[in-house]
Length: 102
Image (cartoon, rainbow, N blue to C red; front, side, top):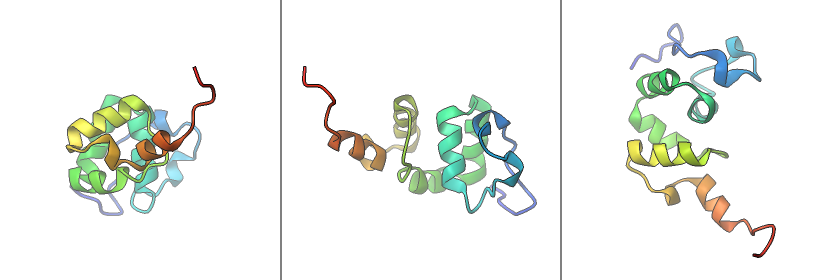
């Protein structure tokens, strides 16, 4: 893992369609980067993020994400050996009341 300022992960801009990709600071915006890649990135991008940040850093930061797709959450639980309850996004979903009672 090389996280020097000169080294940036080799990511496709697909997940970053709504931001100026060249302005992303991969160190200070690491949770933003992880969130975008796990929700919208390509498989190669996911592997690159895991390699760039390392499993421990991903494990400690991604649990704070405000939004994760259900498939991304399930994938992260498996590769990081976590449960859904470890993620703030899952806890928040559980607290939300349904719109309609069936």
